[in-house]
Length: 394
Ligand code: ADP
Image (cartoon, rainbow, N blue to C red):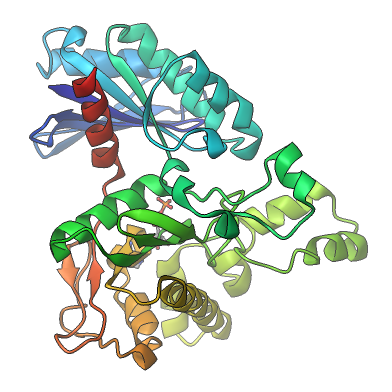
C-alpha cells in the first residue's frame, strides 16, 4: 500500500512516499521557498538527488509538481493508488491524544489552536487542503506533535499560575516533538525487548526537548505551552525566570513582540555565544578557546543533565537514555560531556562506541548502570505507520 508522509511548513513542503507495511521509501523530496522568489524542489530517487528550479506560488502548485513526479517516475500509475496521506501537525492542545483521520472537527481544532502554533498550524491546514484537492480518495491523517504527550498527569502539565489561565485560556504544558519521542521510545523498547520500561529520550536538534516515558507513555516533557521551554536551544532560551520579561521591557522599553523575538531568535546557543545558533559553529568556537562558546556549551550540557536527573528521580530509575536529532545523533563531544556529568549515577561512556554519527548504537560500556543509545529519529516513518494503521482499520 502506498502511503505519503507530509510535513508542510509556511514556505516549505517535505514528503516521503512509502510502500507499507514494508516501510520502503520509494521517493522523497522537499519543496522550498513556496510563495517566495527563487523557489525550487529537490527529489531523491534511487540514491540520486535532482533539483528543479520552478515557480511555486503556493502549496497547491507544489503538490501539483509532486504528483507529476510520482506519475512520471512510475511510482504510481494513478494517484488513486495512494491510500493514505499523513500530515505532520503541531498543536492539537488537549483535544487530540493520538493520530486521527482528518475531518471537520480535526480541521477546526487545528484552526482553533493556531495562536499556540502560529507558524505551524496554518501551514498544516494549507497542506491538508492542497493534498485533498489532488488526492480526494485518500484517507488524510493528522499526526500531532503534541499527541504523544497527552498522557502526562495533571501535576506535570499544570503551571502554578492563576487557575483561570488554564480553564479560560488553555495555558498548560503541551510539549512538542511528540512524533520523534514516540518513535524513539518505541524503538528503544524493541531493542530492550520489553515494554515495561522507564526511558528518557533526548531530542537534541536546533529545537530540543526531553521526555520521560514509562511503559511507552509520556509522563513528562521539557517543552511547555510553546516550544520555548526546557533546555537551551539554537536560538531559543528555554526555561527562564518569567519575571525577566516585564523587567527587561521596563528597563529597555522593548515591546512584547521585540522581547518575544529576542527570546526565540536571539537567545539560546546564539545568544550566549554571540557566534551562531548552530552547535557545530559553537563547538568549533569552543575548541578555538572562545570563552562565550565554551560557556554556551556548558550551559547547554548542564540543562540537559538537569532534566535527565529530574526524570530519573520522577520515574524512580531509568532503563535507558536515548540521544536523537541533529545534535543527539551527531555531536560526539556533546554526548560525551552530558554522559560524563552523569557519572554520579554510575553511567559509563564507551568512548570508542560513542565515536559515531547518525547510526543506532549503544554508547556506554557493559558495566554502565544505565545504557545510553544513539537512536536516529524517523518522524516520517512514524507518520507513515500511524497513517497506514488508520487506513488499514478503515
Ligand atoms: P531541527 O530542529 O531544525 O530539525 P536538527 O535536528 O536538524 O534540527 O538539528 C540541527 C542541529 O544539529 C544543529 O545545531 C547542528 O549543528 C547539529 N548537527 C548536525 N550535524 C552535526 C554534527 N556532525 N556535529 C555536531 N552537530 C551537528
